[in-house]
Amino acid sequence: MTGQQQYRRQYDQLILEERSDYEALGRLAPQLGPDVSRDRESLLAATQIWHSGVDRGEFLARQLPAEVFTSRLFEQHASYEQALVAASELENQIHRAIEDR
Image (cartoon, rainbow, N blue to C red; front, side, top):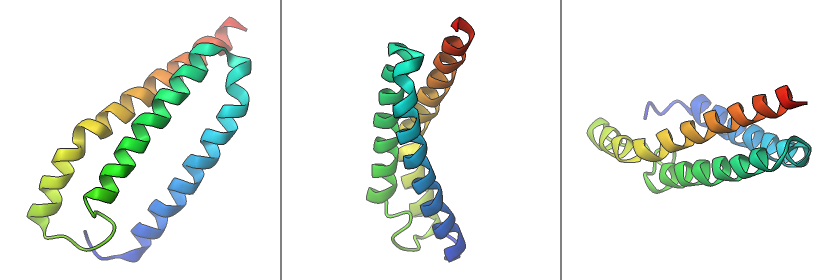
């Protein structure tokens, strides 16, 4: 929205880190139990929906007028919230698995 490319670069870097974290957790999840694996998959699905919305909304493709940006961001809020809930559920499952060990 601001046209400052450092934010785009930071977003791209965070996406790469997120993918790396998913892969690492994918290797560890079987050791933590089926609930962790299930919630990892739920989080992956939820974040893919969010990232797809970011792409469709053209948030990063071009500088949007403030009204358009705000409207599109509001439309994507539900998918962002679902990703946050899925992340929280996964975190809780990981803690439970660690405590059970």
